Length: 507
Image (cartoon, rainbow, N blue to C red):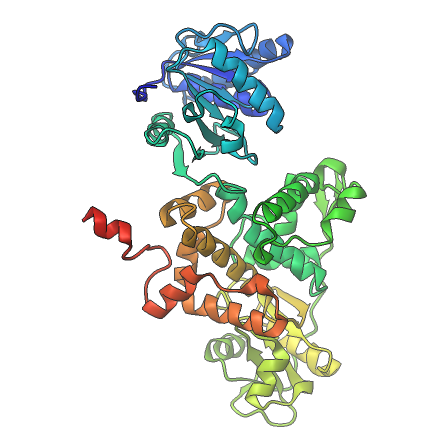
């Protein structure tokens, strides 16, 4: 097979469901003639009508750039997926996620497509290498993983298989850019890039729930207000559907041969068996009425205490003082005591500081006490002191989430898991640091890429949290990535590869 010129004038999209329609719309508006094929003939006609309607809407909003009838004329119904394909430069399949189905489809296409036609699979979870394994020429197949909804989600994962021609991924990257989307290059590993990186948030949120430290709504509030996520992890699981997310959690964990850092929670299997999928079933981690989650209001906080409070943390002391809370500089007998927590429990922090446990509450300093305060309560805390601590924090005007004391605060655990997962991806060379951050930002909607996020918080802080979790739990899921530990030791950003054998050979 000669090297592909990268120019695509005519494509065939096989499978005209949601993904196939989105890919077809994107390609047609980018100027390509788009053949639409499906095993159900009526599905093709429906897709042509649907895409045509979307094109009309774009034109009405002034977002098309050319006459809508010209664009719609580039949509061509095809009688069958394996119809003669003379002149087709690229075939993209978007059929169901089943290895045998995809293999059979491409085997049939190999018989009817010209030798120079490139094949692409939109699989989100199957190995590109395994899909291509039975082709006479496996080098012609590459993964092009689009995200739903395709016209709006600008990210595309370009995934070469083990035998994909060396020149093909680069050409695929250029094609995606020419269509106005943002490509990233990912290895053919379980979960590719986005689904792998997304395990950092979900697996740790489920672990926190397993430990009964907080309710789903509390975890979501902390994730939104402290970390700045658009959706909390349990809101996201309900939106995606736990039946889908459970399968992804299990498949990625098993794909990496039971790596503890990706270990799913036992909670998801029985919830799936009970039909607690989320929005689609009307009940998940939340109940739903008219499509909206039913969320209990946060409990009212006690009034501001008359008793003094003590903290050695100056930023917290300033926030409390500005709210009129009496902050003292000594931990004398009637004071409520706050300890800031980084990668440790309230109990451990209080013992280390020599403070009386019955008057000590923990506070998470991550996020600078800006939008939400998180207070940790341990079993030995006097209830009167606990209510006074809660009232003092609430007097600042920030919402306060009160959770059970654990080995580290909730926001820190979530963030450390997100960053550490990305560091493992970078360290295993599954993608470049830049592509990791781009993929997570665009594909998961995080406020910033996980490696850049780690640099913002401080790699040393992330490492401190992970070391604390490892020491407190003994769980290898919290072992730090060598990528993280090396860069902290060397004073390098998490976003850089630094000096490598490859960089020496290329200089």
